[in-house]
Length: 125
Image (cartoon, rainbow, N blue to C red; front, side, top):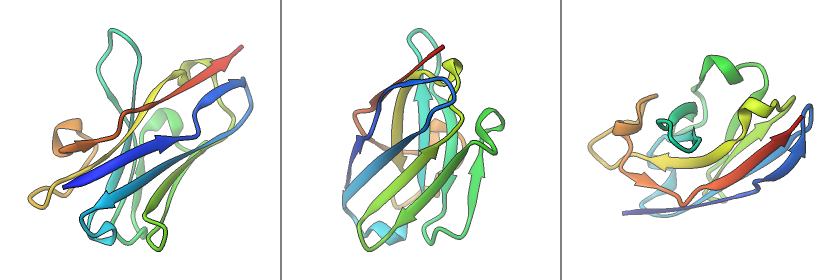
């Protein structure tokens, strides 16, 4: 079992920055990848970024590449999403997710079995 808690969301003007945190507990944190996703009402949950268990491998969705950076601190059981140059279209609820022991986690939401409650990010124009 894995429990995830996101924090750091809020209201920011376009061009600004936010850093989201995802604190994990339960299964050994350094044994699994973590993904970030976002969702707006009425739409599917979209992939944002993923980081490998070691932090050595990262992938990003095209809309955020070059603006967002995913990192992790295994000593603190926390994954971060640094979001720079924010745009109004980045407005969404952001979720972090972890796979169970039988999955590795990818860019597909279905490859993750544990989810946080989400944190709202609102970017004003």
